[in-house]
Image (cartoon, rainbow over all chains, first blue to last red; front, side, top):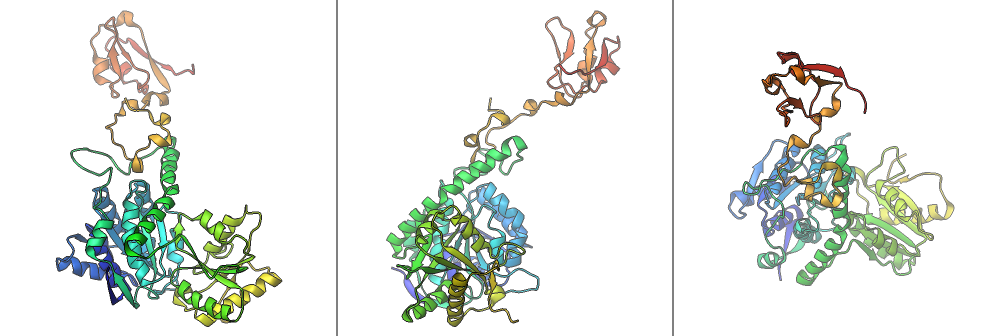
Length: 391
Length: 98
């Protein structure tokens, strides 16, 4: 098995990309993603990773360069955050429409203005409809594991879609954690070299990213959507395979102390770990509470989510971004939509917090749970509660 | 020949909507924006082929009797053939719905 080392998560992520033997890396440094691509640039410069590192002038150029390299059949990696992801926005659609298996790490960051370099999920939520697979990670170990899995998922011939691995900016990207780095030989066995069924090659010319008039655009989009709907099956397969080889298993939706709980707290990303401590502490005090964590955000795991909340009375949802002028947090409104047709559905209480790097401590989560249970019992006319805001 | 665009189902679409077979602009129907069409009085035709040479759409062909006429799938009704014809075989008429 691998070595257990203390390492900064960003550096470990870059090392995971090296283990996956990426061919092309095109990225533009942006806080809090910088350490990832800096370390990759070093690895390439020192000859430790035999890859092409493409220095670009913007994130838009970075992803555009990735389009080209992925279309040529190279294993392609990029990383970004916040404003950088927004600058990539139009190219995100091109990558998924062209079915290019690009892997991107996103060190989640709030969007300006006011300017913030700190973590929240505004950037991830703004790109949720771009046709990329989106996975949220909880800790450093998971970042490393998910990056390796991401290449296998994206490059699977039933998938061939780009994938984002989200890690919370600073909360996760800049912490030093004990991480077990897998052995290179094991990763080689798990992750075969990339082989794309359709690439740009002079001996078999194809035209990619073409013009589609109204008469075929709908068909093209439906074909893409058909690929996306099968993705979950492949993801679960890859995660199971990873668990067999490396001993760590992952699921689209995970429950913590949910047995018999009538109230569940719902989180995504690194806050899930803090929330677990709050659940432990409240359970010790006899409060009937469990935690449900979503790992796979796109495609949304409807079946797993509905099964996990069956029989639950109240669902307390923490969003780390605002759907401005909308029905509350984007995650909460999506969960409500997922439950709408269920006969026996829990009440959803929507909280927004942890914006722009604001910490939520264990005490904060305990407060959130207590407030949530009170609101569920007494009812409210508010679409959502904003936590931690000074009056 | 490959299916025309309007016949493609989503299952016919290549990965990423890529085009893997070389196509041809010959499938584009350019004649459907015509507002005038040429009509012919072949009794005056000397089969010189000047209309064939000047047609910007390349849509004039020789029929079995050796007269030159336009393929209305492509003819845009520009009238250049009528203008160039030395013996006034061609006159442009208003396009009528059939």
